[in-house]
Image (tube, rainbow, N blue to C red; front, side, top):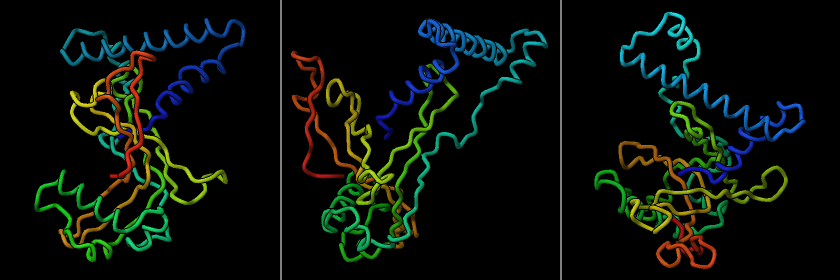
Length: 247
């Protein structure tokens, strides 16, 4: 799952930042030249780094420069981080009214998800009474690491937010749209296995019935692809519509 704000973030880093650095005189040409220069330097460094890994004979000055400009990321950079803990939620009984979704629908969705995606020993018990008593921690933001455009080791952080019934910055509740890998690449036509979904909830649930396992879950409401995801002859886009159930 990743945020649909990718284009907005790319516009900010590639266009707005470069525009501020220009002298505003023929700014478009300066932006293109600046970004092309940065990209050219980056590609040159990647080529040199590849040659060094292949034990090529590089000068000491080049090796020193590679050590100085190394962009190797920490192993945990790809982790998705949950933030924005809410103190007013402790179990499923508190969780349901905040989302505005009945507890029966939540339990049914959890049981269906674990039954379809997890091994038998890791699935949730199907008793609603037990599920309703499990400790729940509700959060409002998921930080998703996505590789930067034309990069191999540099990541951008995409925040996906969901505030439930709470206002976000005094401007109504917020439920971001995200892309979810919902199948293999041969599914949903031009969408290649991905579906657009509205983020309904981000939460952790401690399952004391299964070795006290902590499950990090997201509740989403999918859009479904019309006409098997084939491009329209009218506007060359994929038509989608809201599904009634949430996962």
